[in-house]
Length: 387
Image 1 (cartoon, rainbow, N blue to C red):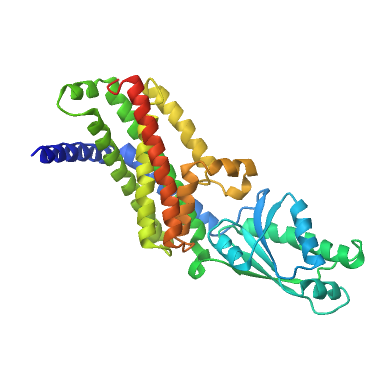
Image 2: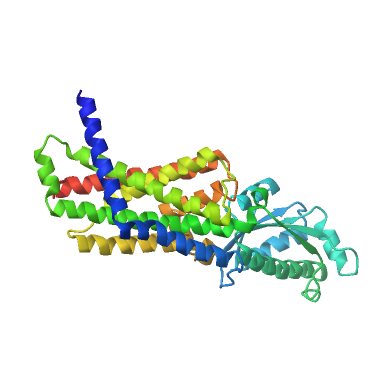
């Protein structure tokens, strides 16, 4: 009997919050319609043009199957170039890292590269190098290719002639191939835009939910509820449930529209995609609870929330490619839920990531959920949960 009464109250609170959200046309437009419009515009632009902005610290992999003096010289010269950040790995690892977005591209130096590249200056046949690329990052790939050709040609000339006299000739050919699930390069940019702006809609909805929570505390609604036989923890729980459900609705609406217009598909694990969607929704809900505790007034909460959200979106990879950011910013972004969510959705959709990869990103988002929820409870307990 007590359980049925508890369930009735939870259901009533959740239904009330969802009904209020749907009745607020401005909230629906800002949380769902606006992100869809922006993502659609950027998805269209990204599908027809690449960003040629200044880029530094591009992560590339080098597969050295030759292990010659020349191949080692190529790696050494690339390591000194600030434009790229090379890592020597195996071919299987390189393909996986490019596919899951860890690296922008990979260069494979075949066995015998040193001998054939050196003799190519004399007119002999040039060796062919494999260039594995991430189709979602065409600008970064072309910049990485240009740096590689320049540094590799100089390294071959330096070792062969003991100077740079032969550097004007490129003693090898580069054969490019995309690394993507089922040739998904055609709409990878649109999928990324929808993931990024889906997060924007989600976080701004969380902010509005936080403002509503702060308003209820200011109006002493919680104090009146506290006089009733309803525990404060139940109030927070129902707020979290309703916010999670609406957040889930926002993500489903975003990707459904993207599937209809840009033919975005879940090429990875369907279970992984749903798990990631739920984990992201939970993270947004607890983030909203935390935002509600940050300011003494609604105005303060809104100002702090907007600042935090914009910073998280900007350096979390929702708006700009991570390769455009300084290495220190890329390191900081590893501690932001936005990056884990966006990269997780990239993997679950066009990259064709396996279930374990999606679960790894979902686990990180659940860790943020626990952290945000714990901090929110501590602050509410310290300040008095009923305001």
